[in-house]
Length: 70
Image (cartoon, rainbow, N blue to C red):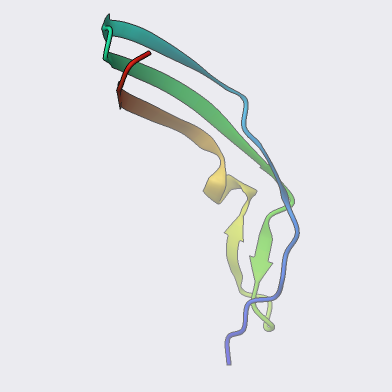
């Protein structure tokens, strides 16, 4: 049986975002974050490693479209 043990970790995600008004009722936003996990070490009962900090570390981007009265 390959049961993964519990793990406690922290995720620090500094980032930034910019929004631009195109019309009174429409905005577009772009952003980016950098994920910095601390303490991820998922293993099963036999010591096989399934995930570490490096598997979750990296840059993530986003784009949003907002509609409404602002």
